[in-house]
Length: 202
Image (cartoon, rainbow, N blue to C red; front, side):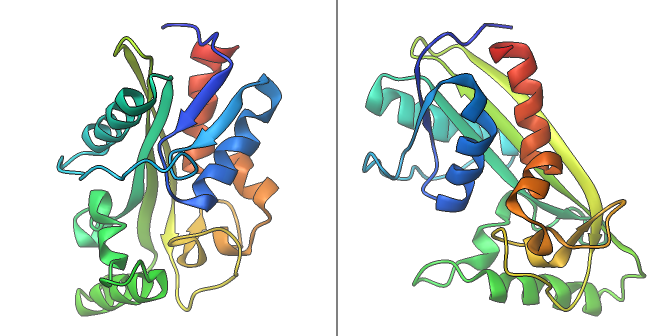
């Protein structure tokens, strides 16, 4: 594993929620964190069918555009009764042509479970794959998984994406009902970041 000694890091996301989460998680390490959206970078097409493949596409595009080290993630919710869908297509399920509508995506997910007559609890996992890429093209991969279940109706206005319908194992609240601090302590992204920090920042 390569140690991260640089002072600046680009997070390859245009999602303000993800960027805020990454900034909070990396705050103790004196690294200046900038989002790809803040730098005006275009979003590359995610053409792979795996989380790690799409994360590498995003990392490489931002690294080549800036010459800086980049952290990219690809993440999503994988629902057991839907054969792992939406999975790598989690954001695509929210696409409307006029931006992303996650209320629509959550409803689509629940409707698919109803049509499949999936028994309760409706098991699912949030998965996050991080790719930390240096300007020389070297990268390290870290993965985090948060198991839980899909619930209905949506609960809570915190977080982003599918958080209001995902209840992690061992908790009575959805991610959408949790404070940012609580979510950041247990999320799939937090688990992947913890692995990265231990390997490259500690």
